[in-house]
Length: 162
Length: 162
DNA sequence: CGGCTCCATGTGATTATGTAACATTGTCGC
DNA sequence: GCGACAATGTTACATAATCACATGGAGCCG
Image (tube, rainbow over all chains, first blue to last red; front, side, top):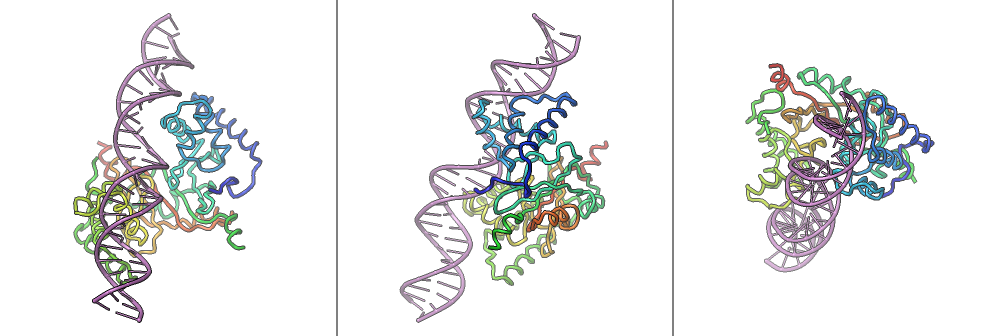
């Protein structure tokens, strides 16, 4: 597996982590949610990794950090993060990634590089466009959408050119 | 599990099956593909079911029909159908469904009812819209897209009104 | 025909992913 | 403190998917 850098562009990584944690912290306080140690650790790990992380990989890290060692430990923490918009599940990869725009209104779309597995998050408005039209036409009520594109990220495209 | 009718509208089911099989048949002949008994049976089962079918459910039916009883049997047949556009994988459900528009250019979008699990297929053009814009902006090359909306189908909305 | 190659199939074994159920512990409001 | 409820931990299990290797049939070439 390649995959260390990610997101297609460079970040001030440390700052982006601290900020995301602070945002989550604030959101939980504001909404009476319990941002417990496992959940905090799980979000920290996702932010640190800065890529899509499988539930069982998360479980390993959580065990290393002294938490329980059974699957539900990881799944519950991830479920909490996803439910509250701090993370997203990438269906194509059966993996989870920290949200890149916490707080934003959120109908995310993802671009997944099939070479290096990196994932970038963008916004989408699926209700507009062909899908929304089809939904209105048939009487379907959209509650949530998954939009995931697979392809080649700029970094891998460059390497391939060589 | 509810789920017998599906697709949100009524069909002439028999005719739609025969036609889809014929289309597949023709496509294979034209492209030198081998439309073998397992593959034919698998497509038939998908069309018959007219809903999303898991790989292991497919395996059961194939075994009943006298084919092998190990997972690869189902996965290989499904892989063939998907690769050639006769079926699609619904990532949200880890299940497969017969293509509703075989032959069409194909960038499908799905509407999945969270009550009755029914699935309808629509066309999408993800390259236009917010996602395409983001891809162009970052230099990402889109090869394939997954677009899946979950929500409530008209049938279940009616029942809920009661 | 005989032999070759390629692809498809069958099978056993294993890995990966995800849930159900239930006991225990901790937190919060009263 | 006490009752209600949320969160955690663990056992066990269910579902989904892949690897590796042997067998068998279709088509080609000589």
